[in-house]
Image 1 (tube, helix red, strand yellow):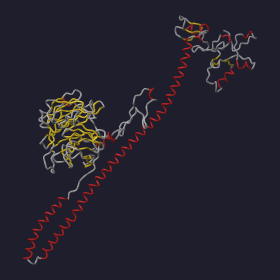
Image 2 (image 1 turned 90 degrees about the horizontal axis):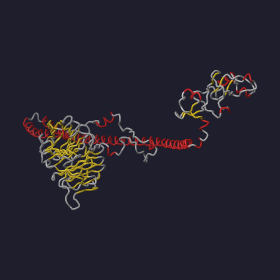
Image 3 (image 1 turned 90 degrees about the vertical axis):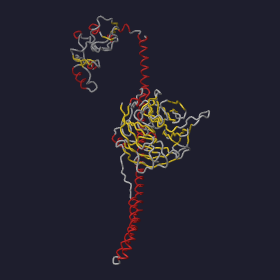
Image 4 (image 1 turned 30 degrees about the horizontal axis):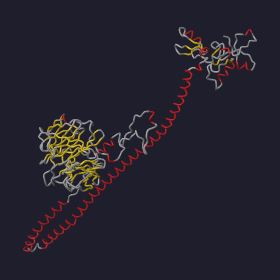
Length: 603
């Protein structure tokens, strides 16, 4: 193979010599000392040095004289072979190994493919353009171009989605922060007003006492003057002394009344445990939740006015859901059926201002260890601290309180039998709020999405708005038959993301399940349960007090089975049963009992 860059045949003595191609263009004949594998040119030593210095070619690979080829790839004698072999750069690819599907040069064929069948490319490529393989490659290229364009379009869309997503979530976060700020501003103003109101009451009281003790002191000074004036007249002194003695008894009584009235409110601001936990939390306000989304669907995620579906900030939502914990079927909780109860203690529930024996008709756990209890006989709502096991405060209400439900923003709603529904603030000290009247003897109560579900003693269940207006009610079936006889307690349970109402009918010994449209779904009855009263939910189980059967029943909502408990523990005529799982306790109130019974729970 004697193929120089351009071989000069004019000098036979130089037949095997390769010359510098750039110099040859200038009719200067110089022997080649190097070969550029990129430019495919031979260079003399001077041209090679210049080639190495030029910016455009300084990175090119130059082969020295001992390693450079003896011909230039691409010469007319090479039959169109222009692709150098990667393994042997001085050789051109001329063959195709069908066994390895590999392009090879002559050196490769000898060294690595001796046992293979290698075709000469110039022979097999003549009709290649009409072959299916070439057509498939062209089609694949076209499809790949389309796919790349689609991918580029998706990337562009995702750029817009990323921008909108960040903007929308920041908007939601800041909007929620504004709601939180507003909530705390309202709470601060409420507390400030309460402090100011209490302070004003105490100031008015003390101001009213000033003229009383001033007048008392004046009368006393008058008596003292009269006695001093008659010191030299024994007879008159005797008379004045006897008169003074009678007056002093009245003055002492007046002073005792002043001392009795001289009672001010001692109060202090206490930090809310829930707020304290929020401040200490690393996830306060909310978290950013990653949603797994298929890559090809990201760009087409549906958008709302102020947010994109699929990515949510935890805690973002309507204020009505804050602070409301509704038992959910299936959530991890204690299994009440395996618990055994041992009597631990009783907490006295009477106070010096009570006029009657207690009738503890309802219980509700507030934040921390506080327990709210309705005392219908004494027209009071009382607060028990389960850490100290003591009655810590109370508030008088304008009627007989029966049942209590939790509302958003540290409030509760209390049914007042014949006096409607009373709202109380529970953030600090209990405080009287708004009130509305209802038609009938209202008993059980629950809260659901700015609505109150209320049961009435004489057979009615109604849904009211927060102002007391009736939205819907159920009393009789289509045949005019009474559906309930005495439904005095109810509770709300979420089953597989659907809310249901459970009602105890103490006269018919039944537990009835209703949907939120007040349609009856199912009725449960068990011979061992008589006179069901309170009904509270814990996970997928209902805790039911059997007033006439002197027991506690557990209704498993997943199976519909009822299990008896509590009778052996000495529970008699229970009014209300409440499980306090945080402390492993069962709390029970009984008729004609001025105490709250506390049972330890043992698995």
